[in-house]
Image (cartoon, rainbow, N blue to C red):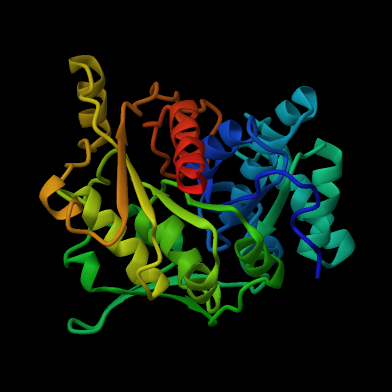
Length: 339
């Protein structure tokens, strides 16, 4: 089993997928080279979904984003993120195609990721949470309603309370041993912001992940989502998000929850509304009674822009944290706890 950490620096494991992990990794790498990005492997939307369906490979999209975030090679980073705008490859990023080709050549997705890491001169490691070929399932037992696939679930307006739904993977997944080692050896474990039911849930429910989070001596921090997801987490508070994170993992493992308490400008609030999201409510009365501690701050970042060539249907939030401010807060919290 590969050792995820090699040097005597602060060791940080970041758990998540998609843009939430990308933004956290991009800023946390300023503090250490010892970063392990543990990545969700249930994505089946957009370019990733097409490659999975047509070639039977594991999903490259979230892995690619994490590799790019940790890369020290700007030109190669831009190449990996390049997205074709026309022709057969329209909507696909070069990095997704390369990871898929490397998996086909090597027959091993982990080896494909390691080779891509070498090409990108990655500081840290990117670790698939599982190496099993899995799909996401969301089930409401009381209603016999079952949703299959991250793409379907991501686009769904839930008819029933998602907090009463079971999140699972089919077939049942085993955790990548290297991911478990990264959690065990870390000084800080960060649960990155992201969609609860299609980004974080599919990772945290993997057999072994929750137990590893409970046992590790690392400082365990959840960076709460800035806004609700329309039709899914409407009116969810900060504590609601944290409760779901711990429900997925199967135990109350969190030490800290970091959340935004900055009020957006009228212009930004209007753009949030266009996307169907509203700033996550801070329920201080409940947070004060929680078993974890909290850190509030001004963490609103700039809105991102949609990629004009992303022609393969996929939902992506354009709302971002001020990742530098969040990373600074995480490290300050760690130093306080260590003092």
